[in-house]
Image (cartoon, rainbow, N blue to C red):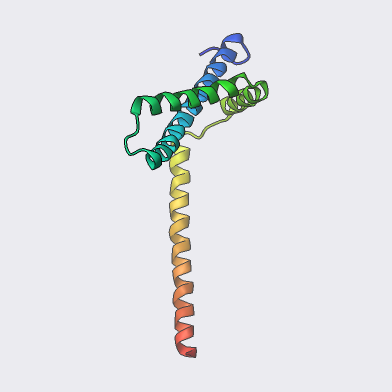
Length: 128
């Protein structure tokens, strides 16, 4: 990996931006395929798979290309990738400790909630 601030580091970040647009295009193609397929089967019981596949690829690829060409969107994506590259992610021991804290806190709060439920249930049986 190249040091931060060099042209190589910028190229690495640009690669992630391109992967982001390709993944977004793939998701758009998948959604377009399902939408077109659902509309198609309402009018024809036998959808044409090659045509649906080509249409969905055209929609997904077209959207990815449109947003890639849109300077403001590409700049925003580069800023997001740049910020994510500067994030300090937790180590495995820190992650394990945080997970234990969340589980213990959830158990304690479940017990407290259960006690409140038991108390209010007992009080309402006395009143009614």
